[in-house]
Image (cartoon, rainbow, N blue to C red; front, side, top):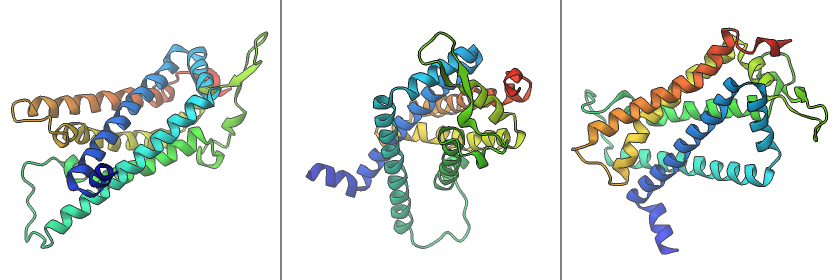
Length: 240
């Protein structure tokens, strides 16, 4: 118990918490991308994937609660570290001249807050399926795919939901903007994680920094390829 208390109270412990929770969330972003990209395999693949998740609450709910805990700890540690850093230099700079820091690193807290808002909207849009937030006038919860001769006889049509949802240019544009901010956040966070854990030195710092940027760009391209393809006509038969 003393060890846990020390971790939560010490500055180094908070950095460890932010690094570990950041890593878990980073892996979720990649895993979620792999799942979403199944839309390019067709209606059968993405709907089967969605049905598996929805029909196994004993798996999905512990995962959701675990992710919620990770998000909460990540936000808490980020705010506490930011407050401690500000308290350590109470006198502001006469002229602020950032040296050796990227834009992403200087806006981590602000960018993270905007990303949080984006994630909440995304969950309300596609997970909670709040109709007035999808800006299409359609109820995503009634999109069902018929499965003649099978049990169950129907399943949620994730393919149609994604196509209809991203067919709105404003929604797709906001999605792309949110992902850009998320990936900017990841580009710094993935690299700084190694430093927080003490696994980063000057010898391979450039490699880790560049690798983090490349992975962030690939994640951005992977996620945004879906709304872009839909806006270009992919899956348009589902709009009928």
